[in-house]
Image 1 (cartoon, rainbow, N blue to C red):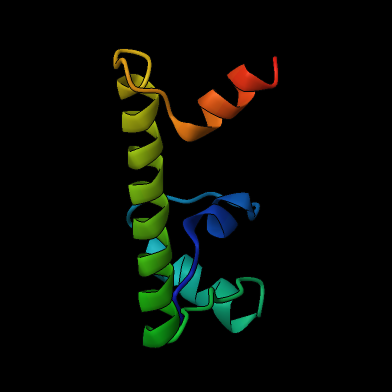
Image 2: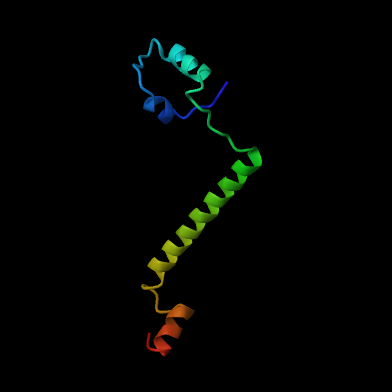
Length: 87
C-alpha cells in the first residue's frame, strides 16, 4: 500500500471516473507512474508540531505586544533607546 498525493494522480493523462478510479490507480502504480509520498517518523512529526506551536505562540506574543505598547504610557526599553539617540 502506498500513500499518494492526489495532485500527482490528477497530473497524469487519462480519464478518471469514480467507477474506475481504484483500477486505474492500481494499474498506474504497478507501471511505476505514480510515486508514493514519504511519511516522516513519529519523532519528526512531533518535532514539527512543536515547531509550529512555538511559531504560533511567538506570533501571538508579538501581536499582543505591538497592540498593547502604543496604548500604554510605559515605553519598551528599545523605544526608550531609540528616543534617546534620536532614531
